[in-house]
Amino acid sequence: MFKIFQNHCKPYYVSALKKTIRLFEQLLYPLKCLKCGVYIDPDMVEPHTMDACFCDHCMALGFYPMDSPFCTKCGVKFHKSFNENHMCESCLKTPLKLDRVRAALEYKGIIKDAIPLFKYHSKLSIAKVFERLLFETFLCHYANTRIDLIMPVPLHKKKLRERGFNQAFLLIRNFVKLYQQTFEQSPLWKIDTISLARIKMTQPQTGFDIDQRKANLKNAFKVINHKAIDNKHILLIDDVFTTGATCNEAARVLLKYGANKVDALVLART
Ligand SMILES: [Zn+2]
Ligand SMILES: [Zn+2]
Image (spheres, rainbow, N blue to C red):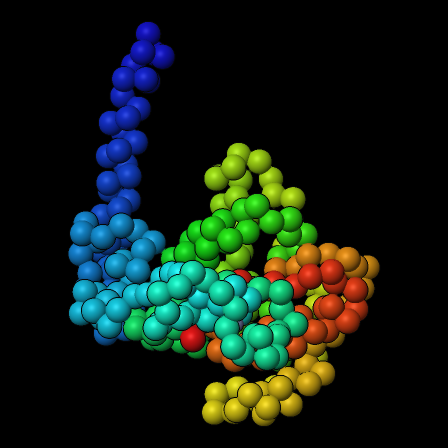
């Protein structure tokens, strides 16, 4: 008798309770556009999407998932090409140490505001959106690739203390959980946040040309655990890839000390 009552009533109580909690959440933490601050109607948007973070006016700046055609190596978008994916001129002349780079988004439109808001103004509500976008890109390009280690590009410990978080780590924090939900099994790769360290406080790369960026990053990274990376296929994670100097320097060091192959998966690419 109790069981029947329980089964009959549970959905009503659960949904009523969920609705009440949602109403309180909306009152306490109303959805606001992270860029301009206008209110967003939570009933009109899916939670954890770009539309739940930015109003229609700000989203009108444009949102650009990285579609083909792009360079098979460095992942740069070909805007004037109608061909299939192929290698760009720069990669043919001076190939990166990275085996291949893949990006979820083009670094333009609203994303040029969204990433700095996430990174420098701690608007962490957007981390979940970015994480899902990156995970979809990961599945698209790496579902059939044997990756051993997923490694967020490390920050110098002083910078980590100042910022309070490593934005690259936040992008993959729940990758294992997302993988388990998708495939109902655990991944063969591991997330490794300790084998590579950033030992030099580098200047911000903005405004530097490619040679200045390389010089700035010289001796910036150090492999802490040689055994952990030995003969491994490593996937580096970063938020933005512009010239690629940071990821490429990390890849150079990892390859020098025994990694077998290093790729990069980034949220956005110029
Ligand atoms: Zn707005
Ligand atoms: Zn290229």
